Image 1 (tube, one colour):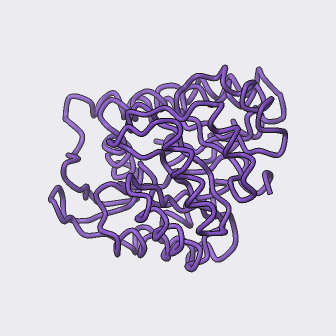
Image 2: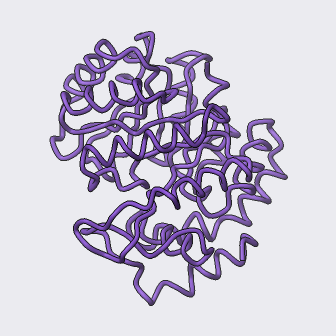
Amino acid sequence: MKDMFSGCLVAIITPMQGGVAPDTPLDLKALAHLVEFHIDNGSDGIVAVGTTGESATLMPDEHCRVIKQVVDVVNGRVPVIAGTGANSTIEAIELTAYAQQAGADACLLVTPYYNKPTQAGMYAHFKVIAESVSIPQILYNVPGRTACDLLPATVSRLAQLDNIIGVKEATGEVGRVGTLRATCGEDFLLLSGDDETACDFMLMGGDGVISVTANVAPATMHELCRLARAGNRDAAKALDTKLLGLHQSLFLESNPIPTKWAMQRLGLIGNGIRLPMTWLSAEFHARVEAAMQQAEVI
């Protein structure tokens, strides 16, 4: 199963139309076009309604509609991972159950944010979800957003559960790869959640990346992952250098603000984003555009 979810998995944005508002409407037609764009450009899988997909500000019915749209458009051509995490355990169970019903191949479950649970609390949270819904589940550790760090020792305990198949590690601490591999085993999926360190993560034995950069440069990011996973350090590093500007500039303001601006610049989406996110500040436009030129996407 690990091979099914390896490589370059794009953390796809959720297109919207109508500018910036509390209820900026979804653009499901543009979402369908984006799915085709990523399949055509070699993305190995699509992660729907994660952080980059503005999961925190979608209503539950919208969250489910986006998952179903991606599953239906993909139609089995690449794996679909649905973001179904929440800081409420019951909400996470309900979203995960819906994703399974909709036909997603796996779910991505972020650590409970804002609550700041203990390691014991996080273990119990993920264990209950895994026991409640049988779909394969990937843990998502991003302490910079959630204010809690799912430590390798806790991941190792959770890896003993049959349908917890991997972790997205977004700390940028590539040294965790060796610890997680040693304690969780060769069959446990190790995915980077940090584009800037993803190349090193894979060269150290990681299986892939859930990538923000892949929204803008999917073909190059796919090739980088292929080379890094094959151990071709020099070629992988050369592509990583080409993409470095994107890795950095797509976080000049909170994700997905710069990414949505870049995707509009490519003509793939409109200018919709949902409050409290705002459109990219004018002072950063030139830097994102320069990074896109460096990556040869414009």
